[in-house]
Image (cartoon, rainbow, N blue to C red; front, side, top):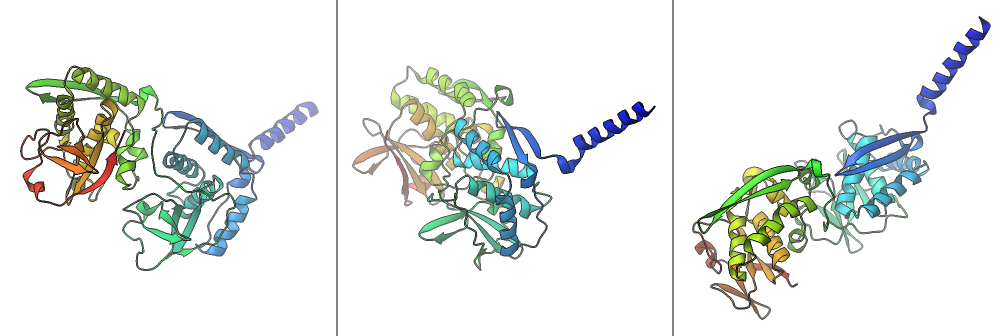
Length: 398
């Protein structure tokens, strides 16, 4: 009987040691990140509450707690994933957002969630700043990129761009500057780049099939595209970047393989001008047209893969897709032209065709990838744009 009692007591103590949350030293987070299996360990000392009011002193104390915690393994793991999967800064920031959401869910405590993003990005080497006003916490990152739709401030001849503007869009305070929190993170020295030169290697089974088609010279052409809805998540809050950055965002591997080889096959025996015309007609008529303001209520630029993924797009989106396809298949010099309400592309042929633009000593032929009132040919520009001033916003030279 005594032996049985001791045995029960032993099991009770063992269970208490095993399940007592005070003795659990780390939390393991395993999740899928755009096709990659991510496994991160967060020490108990790093998972801390933040229920204080938003002011510099409280944030300073919270920073000291996090900084003195066992955070090295987590940060090293994040940076290893960044290197292993060749994550551009923008995609790496999505990984930081994912783990911050695991530790400090956004809807439960927005300030705590933002502070974890700020700390992890800073410890990852990015120069981050926090701004406070009216119980708002604004996250900034140093960047030299040309971003046209996000608030920023200048410090020591560097721009700091708002990373969480989408959460404050309607209440962001433009009239007065946000008060900066003066905390020096020694590692936080690098600029952040919005350039996306590689999309993640999504799992093949995460793609769906989308059928699109158009007619060219009376013949119907059909394509079974492989598209991935996770692309919309990656670019959900992506800002309006400069045209060079925008036009050079690539397709993911599976989407590329489902489209570009087929296009190459169809135009393989065509002269270059006719092949360009085919690509021009494809970008015009394989997708529905709808203005961004009708869909989103504001300007929104789709990179090529989003144009293929979504049902409707506008002139910016088609110009980017057409540019990408011409570059991939023919790799010809091109310029992007911006009119007051329109964006289009001009291509440099060996001999100019129809209406051409003289730029830097070379002639570029207008190739309109967006549907117009008339079915324009290579070298034709819509009448409503012929008397408008334009700006060359990007010049591509192979």
